Structures are given as C-alpha cells and as structure tokens.
Image 1: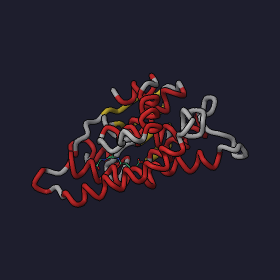
Image 2: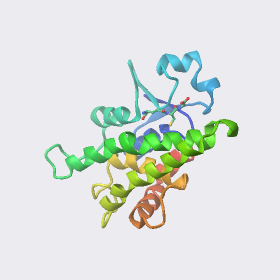
Image 3: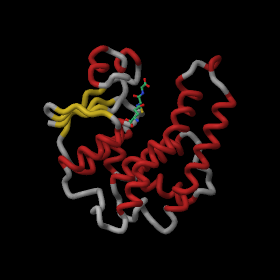
Image 4: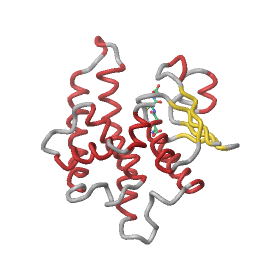
Amino acid sequence: MLKLHFAPNSRAGRIVWLLEELELPYEVNRMDFHPRDLKSDAHRARHPLGRVPVLEDGDVSIYESGAIVEYVLERHKNGGLKPAVDAAEYPAYLQWFHYCEGMVMPPVNTIVVQTLLLPPERRDETALGQAQRLLTKALVPVDDALAGKDYLIGDFSAADVMLGHACFMANRLGCVPDEMANLKGYVARVAARPAFDKAINM
Ligand SMILES: N[C@@H](CCC(=O)N[C@@H](CS)C(=O)NCC(=O)O)C(=O)O
C-alpha cells in the first residue's frame, strides 16, 4: 500500500488531494509541522532535508511533490488526470505543472518564512515586500490563462493539483488581488472539490 509521510499545511496536501481524486488506497504517517518530527533521524532517513511530502511504495521511496505526482500517475493512475503526449493540451499541462514549483512557490516560501516561521525580531520587511510583489506578478499569467476556463487546461488535471494548491496558498497569504477575478474563481472551484477539502483539512 502507498504510504504518505505528511504534515498539515504543507505540500503533502497535494499528494492527499491526488490520491483522493484517483481513489487510490493509501496510508498516512501524520507528523507535526515541527522540527521534532520533520528533522528526526527517522524522517531524515526518508528525506535528507527533513521535508514533506515523501511517498513510499513497497521498496520505492520518493520525495519532491511534482515527482511524486508523476510517479503516482505513471505507476498507479486510475483513468488519467494527464493529457496524452500528442494532445493539444500537453505542452500547457507541462508548463503549468512546473510553473508551480519553478515560479510560484519560491516567493510563497519567502512569505511563509517572513510572516510565520521566523520570530518577529528576525523578519525582514524588504524581503517580504519583494516576495509579495514577485508572487503577484507570477500569478498574472495564471489569471490570464484561466480566462473562460474552469481549470488550467480546460478539464481538471494534475497540473491543477500542483498549481491549484499553490494558488490556494497564495490566496490564503493575501497575494491574489480581487482584480484577478479568473484566479479568484479558480481558487473557489479548487476549494469546492471534495478531494481537496479532505486534503486541506487532514
Ligand atoms: N520542492 C519540494 C519542497 C518540499 C518542502 O519544502 N516542503 C516543506 C513543506 S511545504 C517542508 O517540509 N518544510 C519543512 C522545513 O523546511 O523544515 C516539494 O515540492 O516537495
């Protein structure tokens, strides 16, 4: 059985969301989002940096949320969530899938560090402001791409599991302005999916 090493309010939610959408059986090792759990010897043996998500599948142990999503789709997919390689939507699928960790999550990481993780006396307003502006800028093309579409490539796909989760987080951090109406609607659609709801509240 697939085993997900998980902590709440983290990218591990993407994997719960995916597994729920695919109706695949899995078990969860729920840890606290705390160094006591994440930096323990047991967890560092699974991920050298002590991060989540990590997925175990028999002898396989794999980290990096995007890699885990691809692994699950290729080895366990239950009807898709990914266009065929020769489909017209395939390049956009790849682009948005990777735009998540490549462009959106770096400023999200900085904002989380500068608002939640660092003690107030170590926070840097300049770094925070830069990251907030960078994030909003990175979301403009996503808002544009969603014009007239429910999901990034039309139908719901694993690109939404990656980037939709990141957009939900960005919105929660207050970085999706009201003018980004397409993106606001998209975040609401993502949040209304039962599988997402289960993941975000796990
Ligand atoms: N690029 C990695 C990022 C993994 C990552 O940074 N996870 C965060 C939670 S979202 C974490 O475990 N942080 C704990 C820490 O930094 O100590 C992925 O997509 O899986």
